[in-house]
Image 1: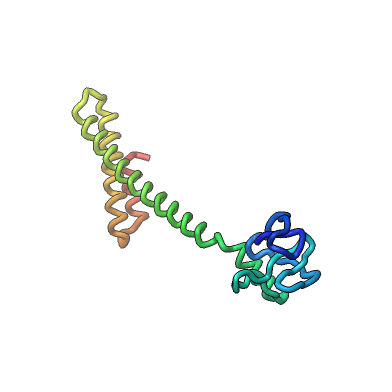
Image 2: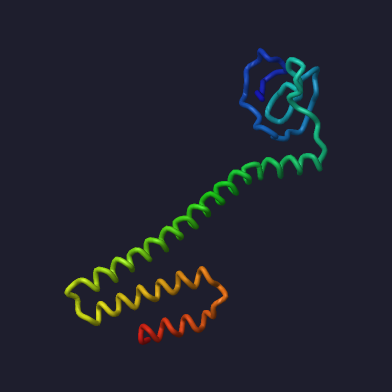
Length: 153
């Protein structure tokens, strides 16, 4: 909505009002309102451009304007959360595959026996953790104790 120097569409402009910007009417002349920054049209081609607002309406409009981008921000955060959760799942699968590969490579290489046993124990523990995630009714203390005992910790 343009701000004019005089109450006429042909007068020079002096900037514009932002959407939902509230101004105080100093004078009303025909279909124009004078405010601190100049003149702006109230009506143009039978379209209402400005209207009087009460104090409560002004507060409500300001809140709506302030939080208008909230829905987009929430959608963006939800999308990022889904991406993070997906990445965590992919990481878990990759870690299991890596542990499997280490166990297979370790058992067929010329690595020291202790190294091979450690890798295999790690792989076994990873498999137990994956199994535990699928069956939440098992006792977590027993599983942790057995896994630690198996690693000789």
